[in-house]
Image (cartoon, rainbow, N blue to C red; front, side):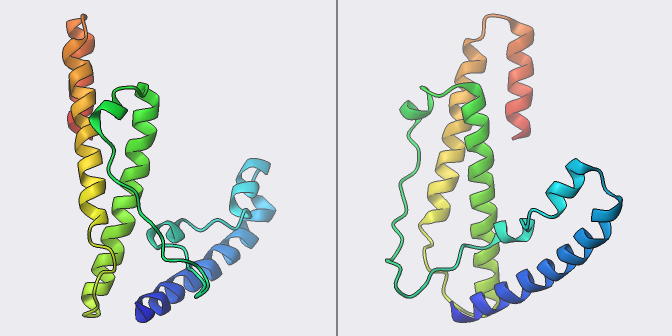
Length: 150
């Protein structure tokens, strides 16, 4: 775990130095919208790693997977947003697991990956139910195509 943090920090430090030099170069030539995103200090690579905790922090408690009955209450847009949040979480967990595996270290919370996968499968199931219940066959076929691309 300690080595993972060191390696993660080195990746983040390298990415930060690249992003700050790129932001400095692009700040003088970029538009106002581009400059605000370039200088915001957000590094996309940070999303592949868990946030650091101080030793004083309590052990984190991770939730359960989403149930289909809960997902049925959500709108199409909410389900789409939740899908991408879960996709980012899955990507972060898989990255962390791969880094630890390469260093012959134990992945700290392996039960999180199946929870994310179950939630993603249940979202697809709920969306498929909605596509089947759609009265318009064209719209139903379009919804099914979109669900299959997820």
